[in-house]
Image (cartoon, rainbow, N blue to C red; front, side, top):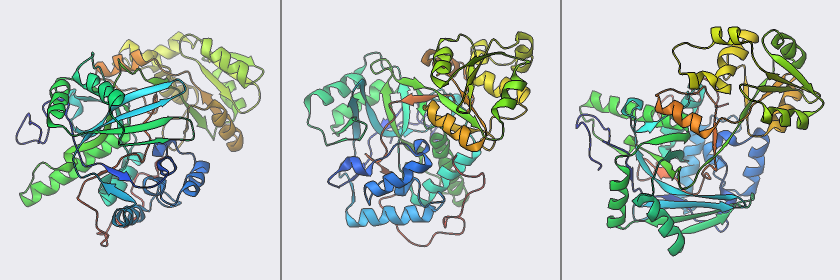
Length: 450
């Protein structure tokens, strides 16, 4: 077990990435049982993944057509473990993970990260979370007793021992497993089990901190599950550290492998484009462009907060917000860097003050990366797509360093780890006994994950 800062609390005294017994698919074509992270799978992509292989991991991470059949995921997980579709590695390991393709090379470490409260400044969140996705992931994690996909963490390695080991392993050792997904990216895993190398990793990482690049809702879920277990232990007088004090994570050196940061767009189904543009004219400069391509080019060149509005026809670029209105809308207790973020301006000014709505999971739809997909959704729903430029990595790091959080769904770091390459069990093997009331697959309070 890792050293504890306080023996009464299951809190590691620094950044801990411990070995675990990885759970991996034993199938002929590993690529066909993997998927993108659960929140990047579009509705029309689910069927394609299900059809790609009878054991595709989407059956675990998005069980059932209604996304809330958590007991179904538990049954499938237990069945795949019993039948040998999934196997548990005999030796605990920290895994080196490489993603390589056209213009892509990222290497990192997958292991059990010790969970820490935000005030410890060990695991740094930079984004707010919403209760619906946390409730959904908690119900799934509680029922399956497993971490089904890793969160994505970034840290400043400064050429340390962990980074040197990652590169040495990838360059000199045959991989444990590898697969090439349909996007042309090759995924490779190596298991690091040598006690001396694991000790070297631990010593190098202990004094560092990590930024949550992707997986804020899953990290919040890890912490919620941890709190549940310790509350139950306190009631019985047997509160001890356990597997719930850790969570599955990929840790990447941001200096050795700089991430790509992409935009996350919004779609407002209940706001027609004409109305959105008309109401914006009193607070923004509005520039019309003939089509999406011209509008996106203008958006990319814009300085300061800017948003491109579209429903499939001519686009409208919002720039140069009225400084008095903007200053009045932005929270005075936030840093200047936070107040200058386009997603902050969207959440605090454009949506509530100009359009009279909040940036919540019920009123505003989210589309990762693809502006054309956002425009299609806006057209189909009779609403407006709000297209954004991506935030700068330096801005995100600076905001997190000041103990601030950007608005929800502000960042999309990549390349993200592929789901299904490795899983983690919280128990030796989940049984398939009937679950207590509330764990039978019924939807949690708070709504669906989208």
